[in-house]
Picture 1 (cartoon, rainbow, N blue to C red):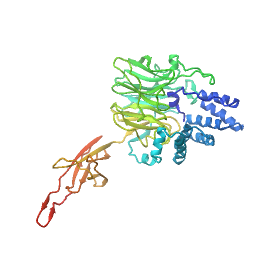
Picture 2: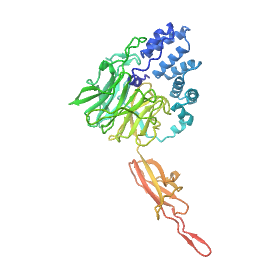
Picture 3: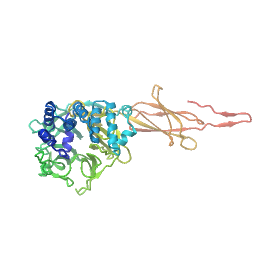
Picture 4: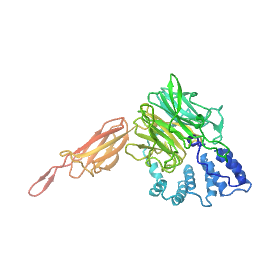
Length: 517
């Protein structure tokens, strides 16, 4: 697989590599120009000729890491780490083991990473829960996944549905120049028809937005009149300083806006917070049009790439970009934000938070929540990213390289109802904690039993369009059952009011009224 989303998001990264010696000069130049396919060939020649050393092994490992060739990366990281390496090398080594499903080996490298970077947020998360995979596997399945016919034999990703038009980014245009990182054509923005029967047809490039450089991904306003998309700073004739070792000028990724006029896009404009010293990419506009979320490696980022947001003002100006902070961002890479229709649920991809391997998709309630992994089948041992969801049509899209190439998958939510039961004293209204609460299906099978918390609450997740019964009991109260009516969700509430048991006191005995279910 080729890391097109990294190439797209950050064509320019810090060039810290200098030629180790005259033997590595050609390979180092290719590496510095991000031409990893050819760089690997040159470094391998050095290995074959007996001229390799730990530097060459690490370059081979990093080049394969950048192309997500996990098996090859593991091979060369094993050689490189025969000598002491920096913390990030051990982290990358661990990530490649995860990509191969080798979690014990990944943990061994994570322990070395933790020793080398004890204050890193990723270290703290690892030390708190080293064996987190079983809990991820036990997560409730939220979505069904299926392949999409819109994918090609080239990289396709970043699909997002607006009304009946599906926009996505693709390297399928064979007429375009080939990019050295991936040896695939440069990226273009495409649009396809989303039909009433769920098929996707008539994919074609959005020619007025595409250039001879990388273009995409894209986000569009709720009224369909404004688009924000990523492209290269070459479009503005802006470059970072020329790198003499690479003998090349490097572009940043910029964000651009465009306005729809009839059936075409025009008035393309670079956003004012672009800067030739860092990149901005992967935009997602809130449905109210007031906030633009994006990925950037700008100063004050927590890690390599972070999720940021900026206010979009009614007069067409923009606020100051704000980092979403450590609830979202880590010292790793967070990328591909998507803000849901409710303007508060954010989906994003992360390589820094605990996941199955590579990039995993997470979601967070930005008003009051913690980031949670979406679990399988959305996430896999490979890279999973660019999760988007159309609330009105109840369909989403995911990009993943689990099949060896960046492909677009269709995501269908599993219909479920979150049932909240509140147990109270029927006479006083007092909250009842430590009550036993069970939920039974329509065949009277007990699905689960929990004790009510300090707020008298118990929550269960059940299937849509099925009737259920809640059974509640507590010492000193009459047990009772309560119906949960059929529903499509997403939530249902049951007030479980229990009658206190009347106590009859005689001269010789205390008589309790019997409890009936």
